[in-house]
Length: 328
Image (cartoon, rainbow, N blue to C red; front, side, top):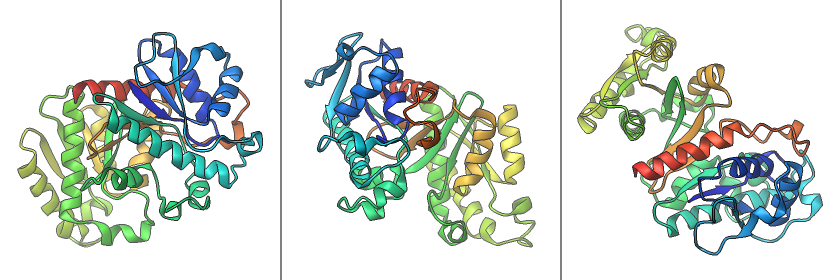
């Protein structure tokens, strides 16, 4: 089974979740969120209400979609298109946590997450929500995992990120050899799980021209070079190289010379990924005790509840979650 947290009720998460589940008839899927919101979304995307059935602990039958109410029921006002209130913010976090607990409870399953609003969650007043910086960090906390690595996978490109949702000015100080090694090792393991034999991984530099012998910065010498050496010791089945200038690393990877690239910060990874594979890329969190995937887009408040949202990203996320659950 794949458990899906259905994201912000004021965004496109509910509709793409229902639409994707209806399309993937051979995958047992359970949607976790607000039942009233999911029923309304189903009507909008022309999925009959009879196909949504309460989850009873067993995989839904083919043609049925399991549903779970996470937290208090919402009102129509709570899902006003593009205008999440405090209740909607809290509901998003509750859905993520409920879905995660269900995955932990049911062996051989995986978690796929629809897009949330970090700002709406952080301002919701829910316990601990003010510290919410994103799914990756929150799920690591819930899981008690030692590390978590944000990765993105598309048909022609894969990447991981050493630092995630942090201010750009803090990135240099946050780079450590161990963090760089984690980014490389977990990307290699993800690629191996997807069938790559002896994955080829390029580790990008932080500074222009890989620092140009420390002319443009010392982060390569201080963190990235020793991080690559550490990664090679920890994951001998992969070929890991770097630091390589970021623009070169991504160009080579897209051309097929490397299977994946390790980026040092969020946008260094997401700009090339969204440029070449927006809507096809899947966000994967590595390092957790359970497989977790997500779409590569946001809440799309500008088109929410208009029936315009494209469910292909959620379909890709669920399909990849299925592959990872089987591989694990």
